[in-house]
Image (tube, rainbow, N blue to C red; front, side, top):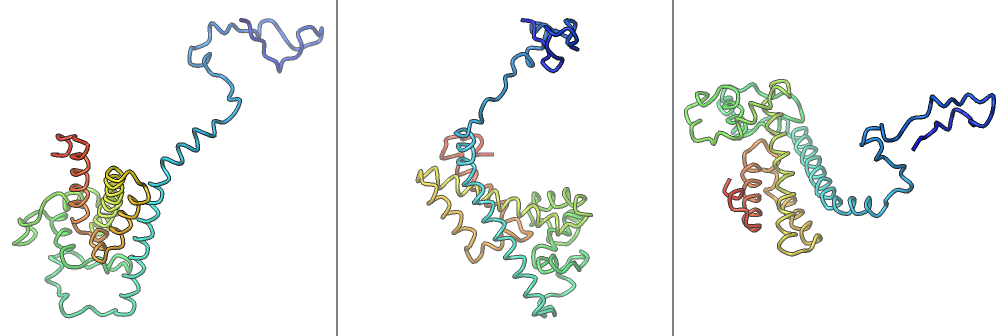
Length: 231
């Protein structure tokens, strides 16, 4: 059908700016354009369904952010109250890694973290016992370090944080699959997040990567996806 442009005026009017040459045939239009139709009303039911489906994941994200913020403030506050390092922290602990000077990062540079940093920066020749360290976490730290200005501590905290969030989501998925109850599933994720030793999941350690791998393997095993579970 010939479709006139309505903004060009009334074709029955003598002085109209309308001209037959402005007509075009819809059959010549691209299929994707001809198939478009004005949206008469918003499908609120579909929008509500999408929001309802994603709402539990939003709660997990908020839980994760609150946990990270509270831990960061706590660590920073403790260092303000106790500015001097204990005698157990010696230069040898850093394995040749520069000591972090940023106030909100420095409290996280403890124990195994400098070892991961050293391997990420210099490989397994960094120190004598480096071969006992699994390679995945320091490899990821070194790969992501350029994004954070070659700061392996910042990249390690980012990786462990991402793995921690994925772990909370995986625990939620497993609990919801087993109980078919979103409230119970959220409580399972909450209890993991507030467990006293859960701060290790936020530190630049490999625990969060290990746990997320275990949770995803268990979830896929329960879904009988054996190849994925094995990976």
